[in-house]
Structures are given as C-alpha cells and as structure tokens.
Image (cartoon, rainbow, N blue to C red; front, side, top):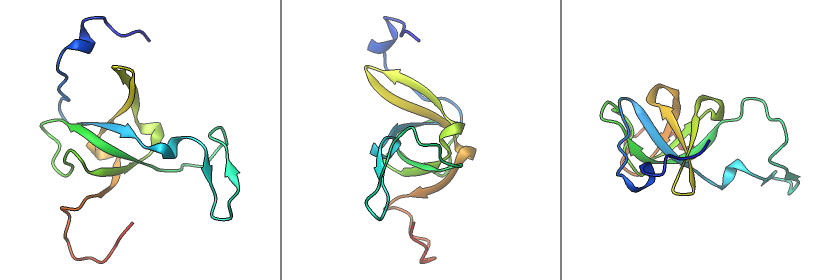
Length: 110
C-alpha cells in the first residue's frame, strides 16, 4: 500500500481507543533457551508479542506513551509512517502492560 504524499509531512493523532505501537526485535528470528535459532517464518500457536506504545488515543484509559504492551499480533493493523513500521491496536486487545508507573503491589512481574 503506498502512502499519500502529503500525509507523511503532517502531524498524526491516534483516535478513539487506539494505540500506536512500535514492534520490538521479537518479531523476527529468535533463540530458544537452549540456543536453538527459531526462524521468523516458524508457525507458532497464538504467541503474544511485546511492543512499545508510541501514541494513544483520547479514550485510552490504562496505557500511556512509553508503556510496553502485550498483545496478539493477529489483532493489529500494520502501517508504515516515514519508513518505520508500526501497529495499531484497540485498548481491549492489550493483554498486559509493563510500566515503571504501575505500583499495584501484587508481586506479579512478567
């Protein structure tokens, strides 16, 4: 899909309950704990991924810019902005949030 030539030079705001995320390096090739290389093309059953939230819509309540979110890659839409790949999620599609500001005292660390 080609980008509209004027869009890449305009400021972009995320709307409603959407979250713009930047994928980490976990999307490609990875290693098992035993050191076996698992190619990015390997079929994995419903594996969740982590990504950094780079923008949030005005109706997002639990996630702030800079948080790391856990989500199902099948629930995202992909978009390219200025040559960078991003994903767009709904807040309801986020399974967990990792953030330094969360201090619930549950003792659960992912």
